[in-house]
Image (cartoon, rainbow, N blue to C red; front, side, top):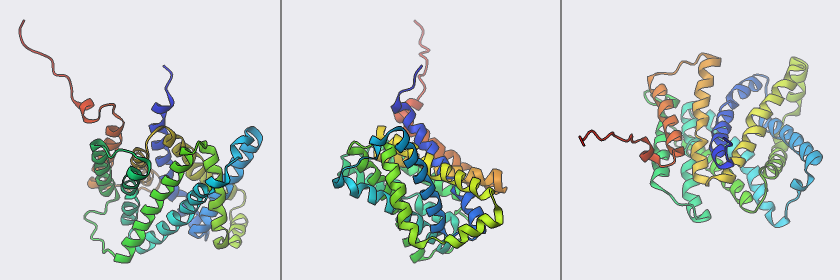
Length: 310
């Protein structure tokens, strides 16, 4: 049976979230080599741009054409992706615990749903709200923040919330471009271009050069994998999913990111989760499944057999 694009779209978005969940693996490695957060972002976005641009130049140049009046969509997507999201999130991880920073970033779907309703006329359905609350609660438990005794900084919470808003705005700019008839690859190539250019003044090229001396050819493989799994592929999958789903649902499905990050931590860094974290992963996964059931909660109700005698 051939799957339609609308059925593949949710899987693509969840897969994109899982790939974004691998960001920490590459960031930890590159940070140990002296890369700053914006230098890391520049590396992943510039390589992603070169690959995407070269591919479109060879196979479909028509996808490189955009209308000048729509330029704001791509500038907005690029800036929110590189600066608003990555810069604020990097600051949040310094000012807050990693758990709290992840939770504040997970507020993005809330802003997406609230803004999408008046902007794109998308309905705020009861199922969408229920899935959002369940997914967010699952992310809170997954982070391990409950019972950690963390001390919160008002400024840190503000910065972390700005990261969530930046993530939401990036989603909305992508939706605006798609609504104007552009393909996902067109959105991605200009997002990567604007994103890399905005990081250019803050990039430490000396550190990049030194990493080639220290690690040799391995750094080429690391940067390429970092580009593929945290920028190129997830952005393509996410934009593809948005083409066939409403913005709010897409944002909630991308909540698979903290779940994937927790799982990567278990297998790669032996970061064994507590009971709350395991429960949180199960709850968040349930929310993603619930959102994709044809009739929501109704699909979970089993048809009880009729035991009446005839």
